[in-house]
Amino acid sequence: MFQPLRNLGQSIKTGFKKGVATQDQLADERFGKENRQRRYSHSVIPGLDGGYYQALGERGVGVQTPAELAGAVGARFLTDVGDDATRHVYWRYNHPMAIGDKIAEQIVGDNIYNYNSAQRAAIKLGGLGVPMVATMGTMDLTNLGELGRPKGFAQGHTELGAEDRRQTNNPLMESFDRYFLGRRGRPLKYETAKEDIPDLTKQRYANYMNTLYNDRGLLGLGVLKGTMENLEGKPELSVAGFPVGLETTGALIGGASAIRAATANPQTVTTPIGVDPPKNVVPGSKKKIPGGMSYQQMPSARKVLGYGAAGAAAGIIAGKMTNALIAAGARKNLPTTDEYGVY
Image (tube, rainbow, N blue to C red; front, side, top):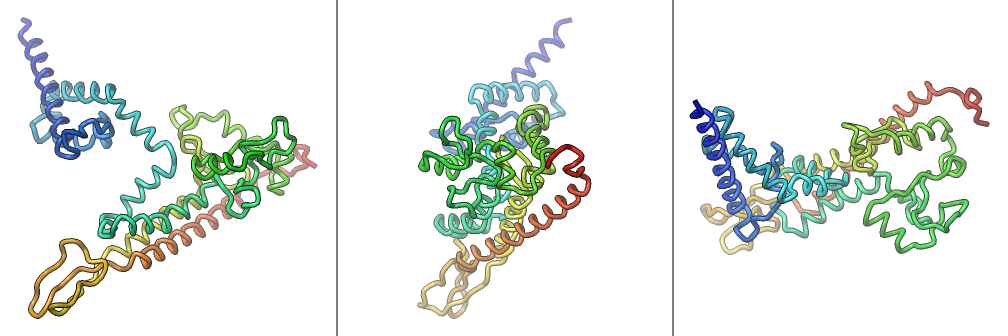
């Protein structure tokens, strides 16, 4: 009578043991036994699992063995909670730049790893990092006199009770907050914000305040939300409290796509015997041919950086044009200032 339950329990226990063995093997293969604690490889969520479910399938654990699969998921869940793995993934990607880096990595592809670490850093910085940061909305590089304070937003370090919060009393910490932590600051009061943004209306201001402070966004967590009109009348997505606009999205897609295109097809180069190899050779591509050597050569890092910057610039322009079209359409639907008492 109880044998089916015993068999079920034994299958779950077997699955649990297989799950533990599988995740330990994956950690050993990828990071070495000394680095088995790499938490982001221990998430229970498919897609963040580091190949766990695929490896389970290779051990015969899957939907065809539901009891063993339940045990294996239990093992993974226990490890996830104990290592704080899934939450570690969230904290790792709780800023749009980190998420953008991951997306860019997928677009750019593997050929960028044919460059050395310094070259890769320069390409990513010039072709992706700087254009994205400059357009995110956390800083205004045309307003360096106020340390890059974005239009409509206050400085983070101002005199207590100051009437105009556009001036900071701690330039060092202000710069650290804006350029290192990516903080934008709080919106100014309407009258002061309108001095920054002349076409700002009370309705747009009130709507944005509601989005910023009351809207809980997707799943009611406040982590992901958006509006078609921020203070400047542009669409804006908020990711974990950090703004992302179409210009930033354009910079990401344009820059990453241009870098991929520039690195996609290494050129075949031959040299006579005794001649030094060319620069930017793809590792492992050296081949002996009659009369000399053959190599696969990548374009110069400067050239790729230039392509990336140009692609990002094109993406930013496309984002600006889209913003303008959306803003123009939205303004046609807004009531006049007389209708809601703004003079």
